[in-house]
Length: 91
Image: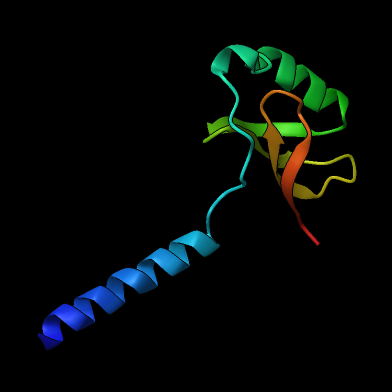
């Protein structure tokens, strides 16, 4: 019985920690409504970002790169509108 309680507590701890490290919560649109990756990259670059890594993360476009101040960034964009949903910028 004690082993079952400990296993359950460990699983709950893992879920809580996983949620803290989760990515952005972008609105879900049908893929047909998403901006194409090529257009998104062009527009993100025009916003002043240098893209090192561009990927799809859930319903978001995510980049790792640098901003116009040459600071490292991790940014999640809405895949349809390119609105910034979440960003982390080096201090």
